[in-house]
Amino acid sequence: MKSFTILIVLGIPFLSPAQSNDWRLISNGQKIYEHGYCDQPYIVTTNDGTWVCTFTTSPGREGDDVQYIVSTRSSDQGKSWSVPVEIEAASSGVESSWAMPLVTKFDRIYAFYTFNGDSIRNLPDGSSMRADTHGWYCYRYSDDKGRTWSKRYRLHMRKTAVDRENDFSGKVQMFWGIGEPVSKGNDVWFSFTKLGKYFLEEGEGWLYHSDNILTEKNVSKINWQLLPDGDFGIRSPNLGSVQEEFNIQPMNIENGLYCVYRTTLGQPAHAYSYDNGKTWSEPALISYSNGMPLRNPRACPRLWKCKNGKYLLWYHNNGGKGFEHRNPAWVSGGIEKNGKIYWSQPEIVIHGSDRSYETGRFSYPDLVEEDGRYWVSTTQKTTATIHEVPASFFEMLWSQFDEPNIVSNGLIRCFDRLPSNRNIKLREPLTMDNGGFALDLWIKIDEFEEVTIFEGTDAKKKGIELALSNNGTLEFMLTNEGETMRLTSDINRLKKGKSHHVAIIIDANAKICYMLIDGSICDGGGKEVFGFSWFNEALMGIKIQNLSAKNFNGEVDKLRLYGQQMFASQLVNNYNTEKLEITRCSTKAKKPRDAF
Image (cartoon, rainbow, N blue to C red; front, side):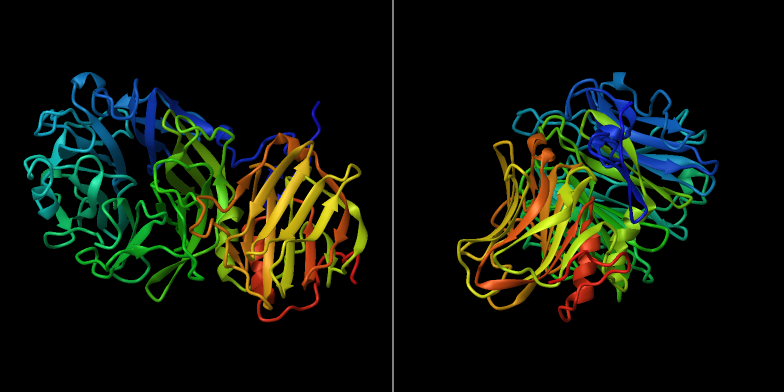
């Protein structure tokens, strides 16, 4: 029988890499459905606890002419799913795509979707086109938890400037939606993207609003309003042609709505409405609460509001400009204050070893919250899965806005000041056995130069090294069996003569290493696509037994070594605790082994 070590970090269960039973691993999720193409698995919960998931599927690939929408049910919180039922028939010869479900107070489920009702498959010049982002906005409903669906209904979509200026001069409307309808009281909104140019250009955000769909059973009496008022949607002239995949949430503030969406600027954008969607602030790029940019490629930044009134944002923490780089997925926690949303530093929520374009990108997630538990669904375009996320994981993100404290869990060695030219034997080695390890330190650098600050070695002189460059970046290296991983900090983050907090996290389960400086994650600094680095299996065998500090023009005022899987939130809390002044390192756990 295989042996394994169970870790509990802030109440979050992890198993050692040998077991590979990390809940964040994409292959460890429960399968919802697998097909040639499978996208946007969105889930609603009925009054008796049944989960109903709608998604877009096809025997071929995304954008093929056989593309349709289906629903499936689960009565055991995602462990098993029924055979999918067609909402729109695959055999109809008309493309239906991007279903977004809504459940009413009387347990009716609506699915809103794009339907190529006029069978348009060519642009006005005769060239062929994809047929899944134009046509009619339609919906059907189910009164038996997704087993059967009503006839098709069509929503009226008034023509606006972006329609009249599109390839068809408004005779065909181009649009699609992601996410789900959201509600507050009896009001419901769902957002979508209108396009001004084929394919996926000149996008802007719109939303439908109903004030009675949650309670009105007669479809003909449901009120609909297209927002914002006027001829122009949610869009900034400063953010380029690509502004799309708008998704919204109601805010805690009265009449407030918050919207996020993707761009090709390496960051997502957001906007606010304080009159229930009638008018919107000019969109701007999203930053973390400390003002540093929040990075995302041309991938869905998915927004959720939880029952506690706090927020979550799924994105990909890199500065890519295209459709690539959707592995891993990261999540940030948000709080609302004075009518604005403030975002925490991120954590990895889903990862996988497959980083290919075809099957290694995951996106279009959904969140299910039930009885204090959370699940996240996602897809990598062929297989839809669902993953339970420990509640403590999300609570940890939100904790970054609470009163901080020094994290003692997992601390195996602590130095008040790291002495130069001193070799130190570690009583407990740093290994990958407990899901990874982490280094947490305060450093003051007087001169930028090419120099090693300290290194850690095993019996074969392999291990870790922290070095400084003459352009003011830090480089962290893992070395073993002829393999080396290098992680470089963002340029211009370190200032001469100033004390900086540096945290380096080695995540053995995800095989990812990343760095935070002064409580903010390194993200490539606008110069590189990635701020984190992957490492391979050869580096899993390192065992750091000795630490050797070197001479350099500066000093390490404090160094903590953690011998288990650590999280960004924990080390952000370390920084927040000590940022006013560097104090002597202390913990509530056992006394540190050494202090110099």
